[in-house]
Each structure stands twice: as C-alpha cells, then as structure tokens.
Length: 461
Image (cartoon, rainbow, N blue to C red):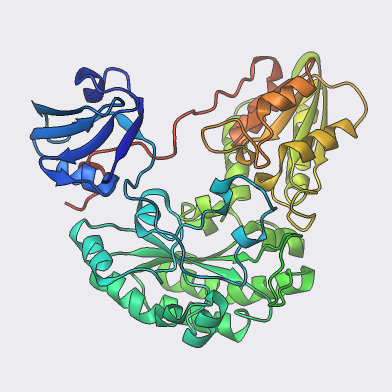
C-alpha cells in the first residue's frame, strides 16, 4: 500500500480544519490510490473530495468535504513519493556516492534516479530506469522541466561511463521526453580524458541542436574523494586543464549569445577557481537557471552582497572579532568581501578560515561538504579571542542543524560556549553578519525543500 505520511500541518490550513494530525497517512483521494505527491495534487484539484486517512492507531477514516478548486491541503509529507524513491540502476565510474566515507548515515548512500524527484526538486536523472509508462505520465501531467544527467552524447562512451547498456540510448530517451512535451536542463560531469575535448564538442553540438527543449547545459568538474576505490583511472582538473575547458566552452558561449542572446552553456564555479579566472558577470548567467546545481553560486552570492550594501556607508561600532568558516575554493572571495567590510566598519576584525576537508580528502574543497568535526578542528587550531563564528549553511542538512558527519550545530556551539555561532547562506546574510553582528541572527527554515501544492501551481494552462 502506498502511504503519504504527514509530518507537519500548516496553521490555519485546510488540513488543520479537517482535523488531520502529524502521523496520519493519506491513502486515497476520490478512490484513487496515490503513488506520490503528483497524484495527490491532481486528484485534490476536484472541488468535492473523499479523503481516505489512516490514523497512527491503524484506524481508517473517510473524510468528505467541499473545497475551492485551487485550495491547498497545507500538509507536508515525509516523502514526496509514497511508493519509494526509484533507485539508480547504474554504476558510474565517477559516482560521488560511491566515494563517500564508510559508515556514514544511510541517507547519504541512497542513489535516487527518479523522474518525479527531478521534477519536484531538480534532482538529475539518467533515465536508464525509465519505461514507456513513465514517459506517458510525464506527458499526461505536464511534468516539465526535468533535469537530465547526460555526461556525453556518444552512446558507447555513455554506456561505458555509466556501466549500463541502456545508457547508450540517450538520444532515444531524449526523443521520448520531447515527444511527451517536456523541456529539460542538462548536466555534464566532466572527466579529464573521458568525455572532455572532442567528446565535449560533440555533446554540446548535439544538445544545442535539441533547443528549445534543452533549456541549459551545465558542465561541472568531476569530484574525487580519498575513499574512491574504483579501478577506472580518474583525475581532477588542474589549472591548465581548467583553462582549456574555459576557453573551449567560451567559444560556444559567445556563439550562443550572438545567436540567441543567452549563454545556454554554463561552467561550474570550480573551473574559474582552478584557473585563477574571474567569475563571469551576472548577465552571463541568464537568471541562474541551474543555481541549485552550483552554477553561478559565487556570482549570485556577490550580487546579494551588493544589493544589501546599497546606500550604506562607513560606521563606527563597538569592537567585533569574527571568524568566518569556508571551503578552500571560495575563501579568497570571502576574504575580499571581509576586507571591504573592515574598511567600512571601524573596530571590526575578521579572519576567514579556509577549512581543509580531512573527512573526504583535501581535493574536496567546497563549503557544502565540510563536516562539523573538520570545522571544530580548524577553529581549535586558531588562537585568539573571537566574538562570533560564521559557518556556511550549505554544510548543514536541509531543514536540520546537522553536518554530514552527524556532528550537530549544537555540538559545535557547546564546544565554544562563550562564542555565538551563526549560519550564513546568502551574500546578504554575509553582509548583515559582518556589518551588524550584534543584531544578526539567522533563523533557519525548518521545513523541507518542497511543500505540497495544488496542481494549479505547476501545470500548463
């Protein structure tokens, strides 16, 4: 039986009015069993509803009521899919999940490859586990856009990299997506010596030929941790390799901007950090279509900082000493902004502390993969007094104050009881924390990334 378990009820919502409670399970709407939040959304769009609920004690109850067409239930569910997340059928030679540390929590080892999670959350899918019924459902419910992990348009090479025979049919799978009326963003995890160079040329050329269905192409460098044991030789990009990718992709970017006015193909920030190049200006990101994939995070952070700083000048304040935690790649950017803040705020002292990632290996240099214990160690190695510590919110699990190693934010605060510790997410957060530390407090959203909505919120008219 498919079960949609409620974990939160919005105040003054329809769910509260109906007397639903945390722990209740939604079984059916108007006689339809529900596979996921998408089924729930469409079936709930009727104005007359028969809602079959199972309470925590196992008792089932049918609740019948009338509602407005676009009225939302106001309940958050344990999972967006009620029949279980569809797992990945591949064994990619570059899979980051296969490189995680042993004995990490189970959720970090789950390799989802579910088209529903792609639509709802922007997760990337390979489509190797999809069948015709999935493509029909995408067309029926207008599930667009999706996010597709392409890697390469060379069929044989894709099957080799994903270690899955069905991966060779990437062109056919994209054809079926397009026939279903779906548009999609794409991703290439670039591996030196495998899918770069001429292979990347082919991939970009063929994806560009699928416009307007293809909305964007993101190219991110392969990440490698110290726990990788795969026999296929992989190496990280070095400075010269990153420069070559920037130059190669730059030719395509200029061409697309001449032809369509948009960049269309975007590089992960790490390519620019590795090459020592400036992050592109905001207009080159066209509204940041793949921000959640890390494309343009730094530029977006800088834009938020600039907006927050408009019209604000030099201020004298009481002495404040702050330590700023970051991954090693973005530390120079944070240091530059810290320097600006110290020029504007008298009695402000800021130390940016780049934290080597001992947990995954120092080749992993992004802030979002820092662990609590690595942060703790880096702070203990720094002598001197501090009034506050800023940590990257991206290092904490969504909706919870827990790092990847299950060390909690509360654990970190207990280790420094005399020092206030606050997360920072955006450039505006960073600006406000540095310029007005006494009043800065980051109230984190405790809700999940996706809250149930009626189908009116995302279907085509």
